[in-house]
Image (cartoon, rainbow, N blue to C red; front, side):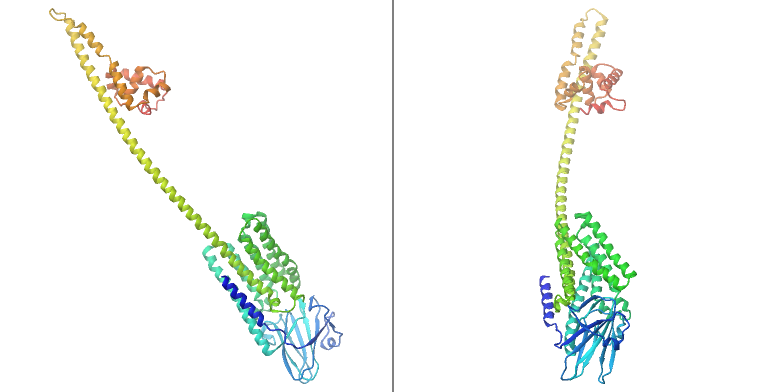
Length: 556
């Protein structure tokens, strides 16, 4: 891109170097203002014409202005082209023909293009200056725009050479602007960002403003109104697009809500111009635009600087682009007021600065969205990295969870196995007690017969009754139980200190999934008594009816 810009600068410089100056032919310019608006050529030619005091810009003059050009004697017949260096509604030329008769030729921007005496986007007259005589011609200006008495006198050959250079310059200007528009249309189609859309509108209407004369020559030649009032419709649309482009490109809402609102109001200035172009005449609209447009440009520059200072890294390019345009505008104004001499750079300062602005803004948008895409890509990579890390953590957590579940399952299986062992141990104790109980009953029956020769089994029955005491068996059971459920009795003692040992035993039997019948046999009581014990336990444990005692005990 830097090489491209260098080539552009070199090409424009070469065109400027080759750009032709006025043909060295001396003439004296004087003028007279017809305040009556009724003077014909005969009356005007007898008036006292006066020389211009300073420059050739008379400003807005509502009356016709007559101009007299006097040329020095020539040795032979000379033919020239007189180019009018300003936009003029109607201009007439009087010059003598070979027979000394004054002939009138008329042209102007308010005339259809095909009626012009010479087919060119600028106003041209053909001058034939006879030899050995002082020659003079008269011009009558009538225009609603600023009255600029600027002329260029060309030889035909030199005009063709210069016109070729101008055609190349304008072709280059319109070509680059068109390329910027087409390129950004494709970019907008991809990104669908309204900033690009407003830039496209801005560049398009700027192209219409710059090419209005050529559009009139090649497209709208039968509609002179587009060569005059039409340009202000382009200017109005241009201002609407430029304000909204600034609002979106500068991210005004992010950096300053007040600046965003002011840019929205500034876009209303473009609507105001459209209304003025519709309701008012051409000179009134021209005065309005010439008065407010410089302030509008300064506002855009100031807003860009303000947001730049707020931290927007892309606002500097925006400010630079509009400063380039402002420089071209200042040079053009100074050139029109004859403060700056005539040159290629002065004549085409606005066109060159416009091209620079369009290119800088396009590059700025490309740079901005490239940086945004790189930042978005970096964020995507960061998010992918975080997602990958999260996935690793989830897999690790899942692995640990599965491992814990396996360990828990193994532990539960081991607990269940040990509970079964405890249950078997208690069953063995129960079977022993049952057997001893049966023997006790049989001995008791034998003792009750009181037959002679049969020993007294009371002492034996008493010993058996003592052997039915489960305390020793309970101690053995508790020792094994606490190895499987180490915190069971401790939690019961802490949370429910009111429980008796007998009740703790019952809860322990429930914990290892013994049935009511088995618990009754172990406690040497009936099943109804076990149910009553369970009912009382629920009361002591403050359990509601919908809470199952067995499930509650398993939580310890």
